[in-house]
Length: 232
Image: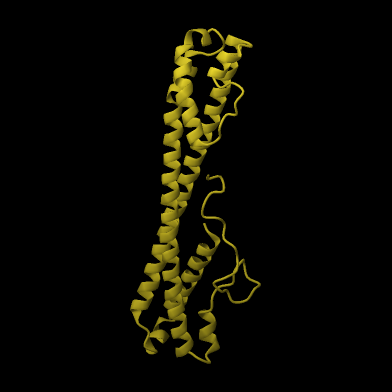
């Protein structure tokens, strides 16, 4: 769980407990039970949105891994085709150039897609000789589907990025709502029980990082990234 979100929820739960414990005293001061209802609802909502955001992050990780695997295996397949072409044509530069042997294998999705589509035609024309030079039929089959595999993996990853970003925005909005409810409630307590340190102490923010820093605030610890570092 995101450090900042986790703190907000823990603090919210502690605040709700303080409200429940002191509800008769709060009510005497004009406290509206609707405020407690709003607090509970905000906690539930943020918990749900944080869970959804975590699911979106995991999905992006999975799709990024699939895209990386598709690129890695496609580049390895192209390298194998180059080696088979060298076996078939040895030092025949004209024929080797038809396979683009010696050229750098691209890393980009568009570059790989274009190269796969080109090689698909060349390999089909020379398949009989290539199958005698180290390639197997499954290699040719894989090449025929390589362009579509890379493009599909890229589309899935880009879509997962958008869904993850959307989930983060929704989660962050819920985070702000909970902070707003907590601030309003605490300001009520400060006004209603000014000078009553015994009551005020119960409504203070919880310490961050296991304590030792006094009252918590809305700054502090840097949360972990919401987007997986491996995503491209």
